[in-house]
Image 1 (cartoon, each protein chain N blue to C red):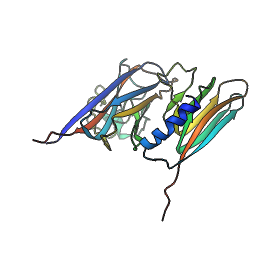
Image 2: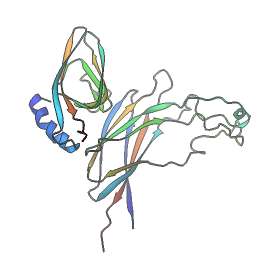
Image 3: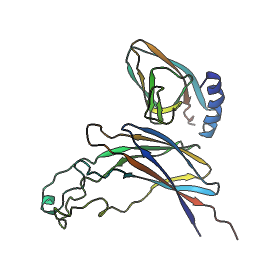
Image 4: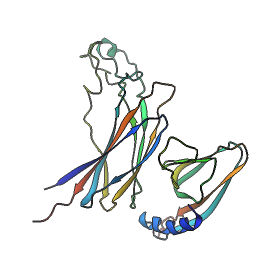
Length: 164
Length: 108
């Protein structure tokens, strides 16, 4: 039997350009780190600039919008793997409505209705590194609308199962 | 971090990272002109700060060291990757690092 566990580390970003250091403690019975996921959850619910995508008849015309960037994660193992994960976090998929003719202007597709299947990024680091050091840098553009938000990092680990 | 602490810290850290004693050390004392911004390519190297420089900002892939910064919860002394050193002073300023350069594997 394979036993897995996910460790969630979450913290608030309250300033544009904030640089947040954090540590993720890996349990003592960890065999290996399977993968890592990251996400943001906005605290102040305001529409993102250009976010959400169009849908409906507008989808016939190609209008590609940049996804609003929130920040960057970097994770460093204390063992010989050094940097094991780096990811850019976006608040919305601004092009989620491309080619979706089912939506109306009153009900455009949003991340929370049409979210792609989230999958972790494979890390495959052994479990001997008991601590992962992380750094998150907020990269919001202060010229645009900015948010106070929570960032989440999920570390999936495989645990040793006791032999019977 | 003092130079003594850095010299104690580096061998342990390099063993942790799997380099053993296969690395070189250089003392890097950078002198920056007023408001100068200098980029250093620190790929496959480590730059360990051996002091707490005033009015100097060091930014890298691993974090930031800036005693004037109010937007961070941690100062990072060990830098690698693309490193940017900024003199925030109106006069020349300097900052000291120990540069740790892992050796390349010898090919047969």
